[in-house]
Image (cartoon, rainbow, N blue to C red):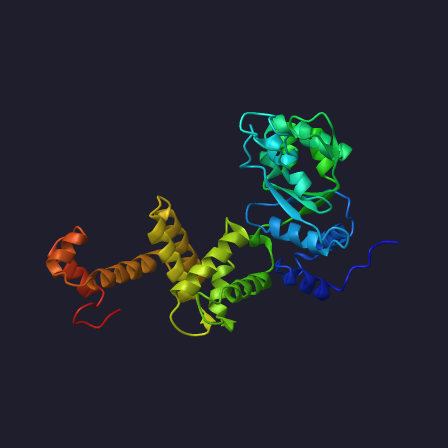
Length: 351
């Protein structure tokens, strides 16, 4: 008899309580698959999706819902950062004297996860040399600590996450086909944030706003204009990028109990100031493009408004004379006055 799935709303509540927030229908298949996977305690799960889509959060939720293993450890192996020279020792442990510096015996991450879950994060970055050793451990359910001549049984469940599709890597010889097939028993594909329902954006922003009360008082609502703005953002960093942006919004906010588009633009400007990256100009151009399209502004009109706003910003610089401001703008005083007049700045009615 198959697993009885909760009603969609109840299922969303279950995963939201475990940190994987979604309110729309676009994630229904993901939640259903993850819920069924949590009841298949001895079956390997492969989570695939771009960086920042919530793979680790979902893996922890699957583990927490696992009635057999949820009470036992959830141990993360960061495959992209693990030292190749020490990887065997990290994963499977070692005996005293097995290598230089091994002054005592040490258990590995597989032993630390006994009866629980080993989460292989960014498994696509696992060095090729280590892949057959991992495959051997998965197939036989046993490991051999470095320097030992005896095998040790381990009872763990494997959940792997990949931020790149593994099939092309297999075809290119960068990932072992046999290991891929061993991991690819239950596959869950997490879509990027830009492909999720707009309702998810509101739910996520509110969730993150309530998650950091030390940064700002409780947020009660989101301005509809903010949500419309967020719906056209690309979010290359996905949910992780959104969470970081919400934290910046909270830190920079001074009043009110609603998050607005102005709050978002403020944190974007602050982030750009901090990074001083070469991508500032492309990012600004992207933002201006969104404003132009959303407001149906002709290009010349947009440029005129931007020039006016830049002039107003420059004239607000404290302690600067008009001559000094003209020098900052790398123009003449005459041109500065002409442009001020055109925009109705300084004595004339502003445009």
